[in-house]
Length: 352
Image (tube, rainbow, N blue to C red; front, side, top):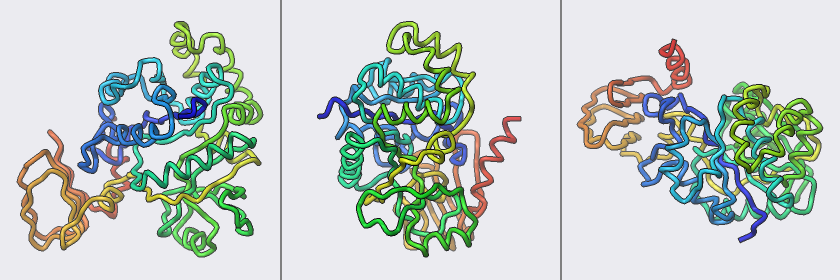
């Protein structure tokens, strides 16, 4: 394995659209959402470790999840778990991790990947990732793996690339915000738009140079800790300074400003597992398009539902179509799939 290859797994999110299974105390990346035998973070770690040395895989997460990470990934040492004392979106934590890696290995190339996405063809994923590593090892490039859109999704940002480019690696023209339905349809029709799946690849030099150029204030904040990184004093520096960083995404902070951005259209199946509806897409279904996780069911005149309960709970349903039915400890959720984006707001109101 190439000792210059590194990975940063982003595992700090709450996944509130998967409430009540995903909670602040135990979010979705630590659940076996598809009943596959492994949690989402375990699958992500396993997928990346086929190409990247285990000791070079860092996990970025909130400090409250430290013990869960170490329990689910026993091959990981504590120093590989980077703990965020405050939630500050993706840019600050990526800069922090990148400076740590740069101090350890200035020749590093890295992938930044979410912990909670589902990728089926892991061989194709490894091939695409290797293409990116090869390119970024030689070029000053910020790369992303773009996902081939299968329908006009309004919940994703899009990546527009130069349609005259026939090479597998394409120059990005611009990032586009989440569109309305008609705009999304026009993106698919034009053929040179990809979903932004949030998977990024670059050399440590390219990304730290980009932060220095586009986020000088954030860069200066984290540069103050250079002497402490990978030492015993790192923890106290991060606890004192991390919350001072701006709350901003890597897309907005760097990728939308840079001119050296490239994309490879992914050749693997991908699902961000962002909602109960997207989970329903990936699960096996009965003749009436119902998906069941753990439950024992008796269904009559019921179709296109997703049903998730504790193991072996008997669920009897008559006359429901296109619903989310989730029973988790002291919460029962029965909610139309067409309104699933509202679940995040319900969770927020319950916390008040």
